[in-house]
Image (cartoon, helix red, strand yellow):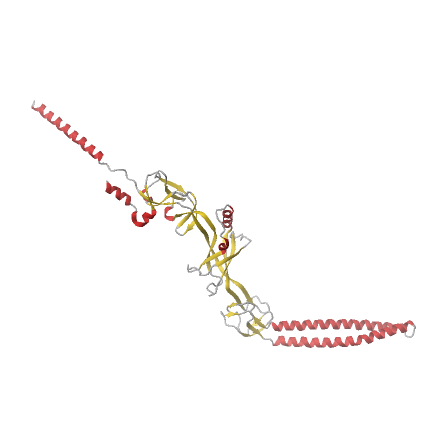
Length: 414
């Protein structure tokens, strides 16, 4: 009996422990924390007006270039400019020794005087010879003179007329020689054909200059204004034309031709330029088209051959979708994706097509629609299909939201 009593006591104790355990489990169940819903910061996608530009590499080139070459051969007698200085149109740059050309001119003038004198003599003799031939013609008709005398007179007349024609031709040749000598003499002072800045001289005083030589004596370049030649791929040119034709972009009137310039040191050139023309030929080796722009250059900051980057305006998009770059990531395939909060407050993944970066934003051509709520902060806590609590990004940027803040608040409430 003692054993039975002990067994009953043990059974009662087990029942009591089980009952207490059930009560404890029920209390634990009732005390379970609510499901965690992460918070994310979102921006609402809104179309806006955007001016689209493209940055193209290029180089500067002088507006006018004059390679100074001698037009006559001779010894450089003097150089009358300072290298690197500004010269004006008509300024004397070099002087070739004029003595040989002055002598040639004097000789041509003397030859002309001789030819003119001979012409006067020939003209004076011709009437007498012509008259004699006429008289003999009348006499031979009545047999007063022989036929031989008449024939000799006619031959003398023809010879005199030929001599007169030759004298006249000689005078014209001599006059041309005089003009040629004058022109050659006028080429001995070498003047600048344009206004601009002259470079380094390739010859010194005493050097021999050859007419139309391959190497210029110096080069004068007009630097204000100055050209900037940039290249654009023909494929991009075709895409731009298609956008304009389909109405995705609009021309912005006269502003369309305005161009800005970025210098080699990353600074912005203070003067705006204008787009002058596009080349009509595509370079077959590079597949590019050359665009020529014109910039004012009053302080000669731009020098020929300088590398620059031109910012060219393509057009205006009235309904552009621009989103913060931090809201766009890449998937395992390398495609740009964005996460949005749908109408059920769940995360949804969108694959995007991006056009370009504008400042700190991406220009999206497809994948997002007006009114979409794009997640820009808190993406590390969510996955597609997960419910979230969306708060405006403006509030988040003001300090009301920070990564992990939603989780801390939830844990605090639990």
